[in-house]
Length: 268
Image 1 (tube, rainbow, N blue to C red):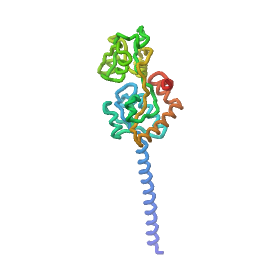
Image 2: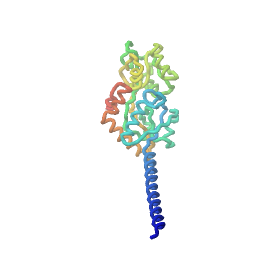
Image 3: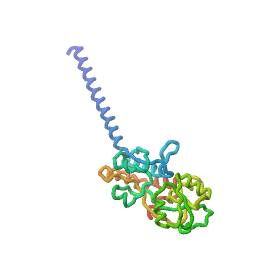
Image 4: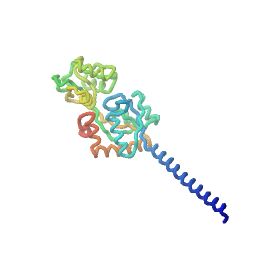
């Protein structure tokens, strides 16, 4: 074989090897990229309610957000959030723009007719907080008195009216305004869920307590579209929730925001 032919053959072989390796490399990168894209849970939230889902330092955080992040991570998934007005939040699931919602979503009979839900990770009750110096002990003690809340038509208003219509409700535009109303003694109590009231008192170091009695109770969970994809993501999140409950992560997140162990509340 002539020298130049031998060199040409070697050069050709090297080119073939490089092409093969390059193809394998880019195929691997492409496959990896495709796999990573598939291992993402898309989530909708209003991102405006403390302590469940809110902005802190320009970053989305909160109890519901951290629970979902931890559950997804336990199964090797990442989360990607979209913030939207609450009025259209379920439409994000309906249109399949997202897989689920992290926004303190209670399991109601109406919602169960349309969506499937994860294992509950919180228990939402309708409660009233008062100052420690107040004499009120139970919800009934607040008959004839006025309590503050925010958001006309919220579930807490409906629940309290159904439970005891003799308790007056004053609705403020924002939660901060409702909180200030109790701080400044313009009302006798504050109406929200036990978890939210506990978190507000803990976060703002307020000498408040939640009076005895629940006007209503509902389990909180992540909703999914009732189809094959929704069921697949639900199973993934449920596995993750089971892991973070068992290893104490759920309890740590609960104590961080509410000051109590949510797993005990879920047994009720």
